[in-house]
Every structure is written in C-alpha cells, then in structure tokens.
Length: 141
Image (cartoon, rainbow, N blue to C red; front, side, top):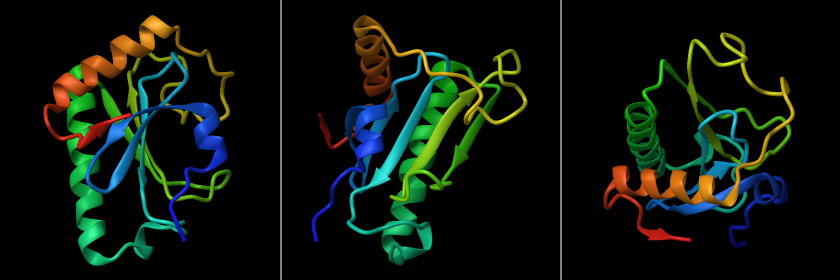
C-alpha cells in the first residue's frame, strides 16, 4: 500500500513541502493562515496508529510548524486539531487565530465560504514560511 493524499486535501490545499514524516499543505483560504500536516504513511486515520517513533516525530514537526507560524503571523492563539470527520486520512490542522478574526472565538470550520489566495499571495506566504522554517523542510514541492 502506498501513500496517496486524500482527494479533498488535494482539492482544497496547496502543497508547500515535506518534513521527514509529514507533507505540509496550505489551505487555500486567504481568510486565515491555515496549514496542515499529513503523515505520509498509508492507511492512517488516527494519531495512535503511528508507531511510537513516528508519534514523537509528528509532535516535533507540529511544534516546529506551530511555533514558526505563531511568530511569523503574530498569532493570538494557535488552533491545532486532528478531527477527520469529513476527511478520514490523518491530518493535523494548524490555524493562526486572532482575537479580531471574524470567527473568534468560535472554531472556523463551516463558518464561511473560503476565499482563495491570489497566485502572488500564495508565493509570498509559502516563501516567508520556508525562510522562517529554515532547513526543516526536507524538500519543496
């Protein structure tokens, strides 16, 4: 069995790069800085299905991403969640939140129609993130 990204994630996201374990995606919704980690292991739906070493690596990658996003975007709060009700493939949302955002303090899921990024905004956001992450991404997509 080989890893394949869920079609909904392919449709809704922009590929940014890879950590050692996870593929890094950016949700194509310009209303919120919103990134997603997807462990590149086939058949996963839950974190507990990862072996102990991969669970530890997932936490390291998630923390590296979250701390970078919090600093880069000056977050008031980071929302980090693995829900998977619509997309069963294990994926972890990392969403920058502000007390002034239009959904605060509620979750953002299902609140608003997405507003896709313009091409220039995509390039700027991804470039800034890659610079801040330094050499943590193993490759760019």
